[in-house]
Image 1: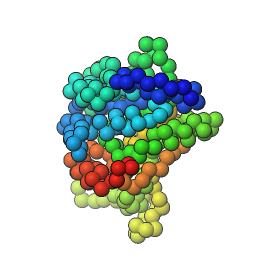
Image 2: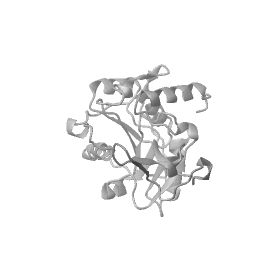
Image 3: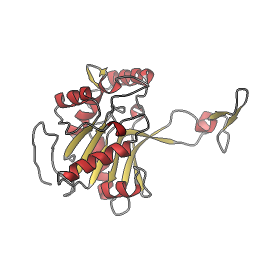
Length: 250
């Protein structure tokens, strides 16, 4: 493993078995559920900074890119020590824009500069509760299983009974969505949900299949305390309280 450190450029320690890693942190400015959430203070620092710091702690990430359409978010990211090389075009930062579109735009940007990467790491600022080792453990797992798998996603156990999910048919009727109805929560089979701690993929496969859920994917199970994504103020309050209880090792 070679080592290069260029302070303040977003370029970090190089590489995982000679394979370069690009981390993209998508953070558009137009959040509807919680306006301004990406830079909303969380225990004294903007929400996005939690994810930037996690990326900077990785020993395998070579380049950190904050992809945003907001000059205000860009300024916060740069104050946290990561260069923002571009502002994302408005057509890629709307309500219907996808993470894949933002990531592909970042990949294309670096390719135009002559920089190629083997792995892409998508880090969502709305999932700020990460262990210091999560990203690198996921990268190592995927790299070790590379002959058989092309991506890895962080998943957590759902905290509600999926067998009791309901669908409202009309204003007066509802029905169960489950194939098998189970009346006791403890009898429900274990189900998992993908959370944004990290999505990691081989770049070639991501661009070919246009998804972080390709045909050959594996997983990394996160702790119950990490199973949150901040979409509204109630999620934010939950995450804030969990972080207050966490010790310094997280």
